Length: 237
Image 1 (cartoon, rainbow, N blue to C red):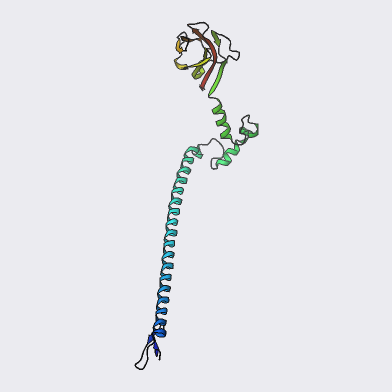
Image 2: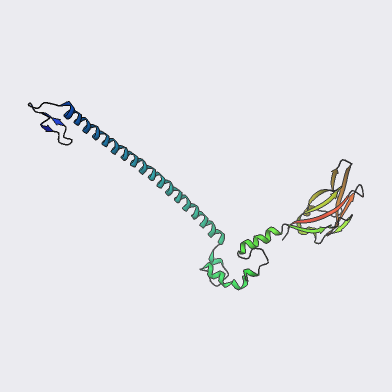
């Protein structure tokens, strides 16, 4: 006969003296139970390991997110502090209201005017409009020889001393040459020289400022070229 008794948890065969063991039933059945139990334990362990790994990854991601948040908060605080420094102290306002920036600005709205009346391309942001004007005023054309006339003396439309730099554009043998001088260093009557080499010959010209708004050019060959344009750069306040 098969085993009379069985183990508590998996009912594996336990024999008494009168039992007759059977390998085909008792032993094979016990092996199947043991194999199933071991596989179930392994699957459970693998699942737990995967869950633990995922939990660790989630925790590390949360730590990274928290660290990034702290960094962003510190950056925001620095930006806010810089903004407060740039804004200045409210008590130094000359407006009646010195406690609220918006109210202080509102006191001067009528003086600011209507953004739609700006002549700039941008009419929605005062800062952008101001920058647009600022960027547009780096170069001023003080003379333009649109017809490419031969000239030896020209008159500027503005006093060259009003600009940090003066650029004189000269055409020589159909090639364009630029000479740049610093307006603070310009001395009337002093020549600024430039050399030009071509396949035909070497040429030289001299530029001088006879007074505050006249520019003269002298070529060693009278047919060598002419003044094409003059620009004033970075107008002084």
